[in-house]
Length: 90
View 1: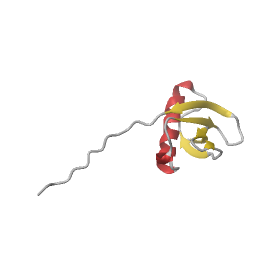
View 2: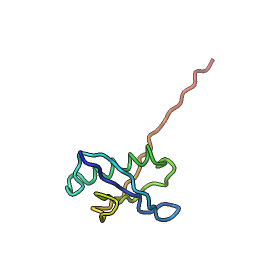
View 3: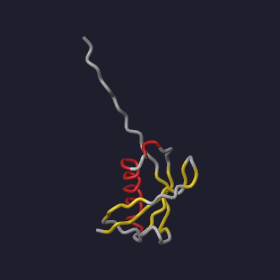
């Protein structure tokens, strides 16, 4: 397992300079792993870094380390999951 980092390329508020770490078994250099890795990063951002408040789709840059150049850039969208709250009526 390795730790990669990612950043959001642009937001509604301008460029995003924070890097976020993600432990993964996926290889950012392997083209077959890149879409899965971008999805995992987006899920991490959504769940743990205020991604629920972001406007999607987002463009993510994937890096091996914050001081290294980006390995790839991916656009990731968020699907809406319907929620059906119910209330028992008397």
